[in-house]
Image 1 (cartoon, helix red, strand yellow):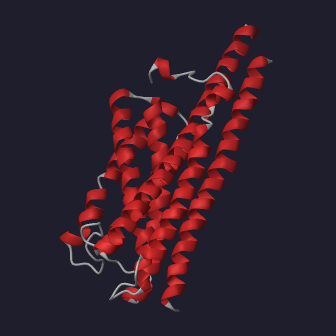
Image 2 (cartoon, chains in turn cyan, green):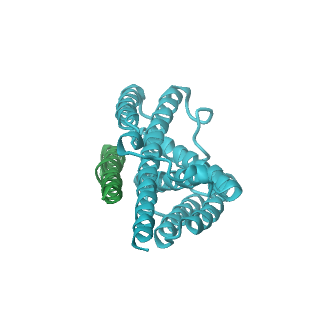
Image 3 (cartoon, each protein chain N blue to C red):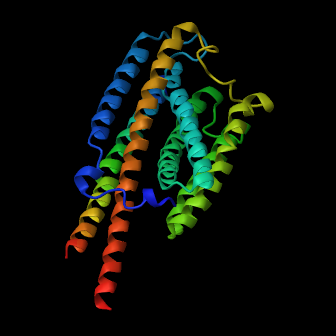
Length: 243
Length: 46
């Protein structure tokens, strides 16, 4: 790891970023507003009726899960390339948020699938590849909790993060590559123009919430690392004093 | 179940996850990090 990235924090006051919880509160308020807007302005769909309103949570959450995993990919590549500690924290924070959003995507899809397809779950390529993605990121987080040595943990989890991210194009294209129950990707170009604005603003609002999740988790990781550094220094100083 | 039950369930689950993870971040993960930092700095002062 770069020496400039060790011992980067000196006191709890400078360590914690005070703007993050404020940003989080604003992001959540924006999400409430965009959901109320989309919910109250969208007419029932001709085929799905009011079930269409599930799209405003399911699709933005799925897109943002992909964004989180893209962050994991970039940060993990940086860990392997430069050994950056900051990139390791960022990858781990994004992986946790990505796992939360991927799990939520699956649950929301299941809630939508029951009245639409008649089943809560089916081993459809889109659903199965998304489940595989979730399991890879659960594995990523488990790996981090099992490996104590920071450098080894960073390298191993970066490798798993990159492998996991490689599954994202498979998830995204699964509805085109295989025969599947799931409809083609929903985007502002594939939904009725009346629904496009609601979809866009909810995606941006969920993105703000995702930024808050990653920033806060990153902040906590930084503080814990600073604490470990200080404890190690104290232990070395204690040993030197005893000699 | 009516279609509104599914819509309600989707929004309830979404908000349960968002609020639940926010509470975990603010009141479990951050608290643990602050406590760890406090213990470490107290240790070095001694």
